[in-house]
Length: 269
Ligand SMILES: [Mn+2]
Image (cartoon, rainbow, N blue to C red):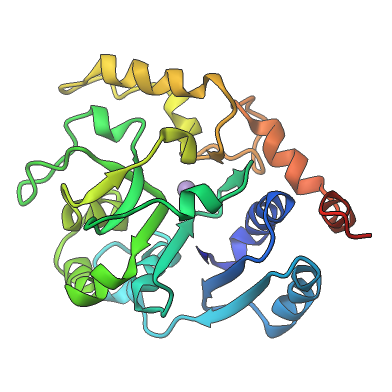
């Protein structure tokens, strides 16, 4: 499974990794990065080894921030476009602003069929008229915080090359999430929203435009049980403010969790 992060996201990233380890063993993590030191990987691999897991340091070459025209975005988000160049048959990508509350195997075992990827319908943008002149139809629209890639399909259809060409060609407002939606239009499989519940959906819909309020109301109902993956979308993050966003306590539960507690949960002392 894959994460992509710069150093600013180190603590949320570690929290996400601990949440996964609390519920899962034998995970091969890959961290797409430019800056993380070898010692950080050595330290973390010592912990992960006890769980049959490991983390691989995947250094990203090239400069995405110069290859497109959006200097204000976080460059690391674009690294995920390179995931399908890796050897694994299926690859699960997760954002690092989320926590996982369950065994990920049922998600990983999703039959992708002929689809390019699996994802969840976006809790906000799917119900707005967000689109572009060049891409007038972007529905259904997925959130890119959880992506299960059909690697084989991406390789056979040269989709990484297509994605990188699009990154240089278009000025997408939601960056590579828009890009992936344009590239994978009607070629993606929607899985249950509990696999990527977007906390920012709680803060409401944009005031204008053609809004599907019924669809949005249905999305909010999916929160009624605790989601399998809680994604702290939007500008307000539980590690950076005192707003009482839903499920904030889950972030702090996993943040303070000691590795010894994780080992004990798996019967390892
Ligand atoms: Mn995110």
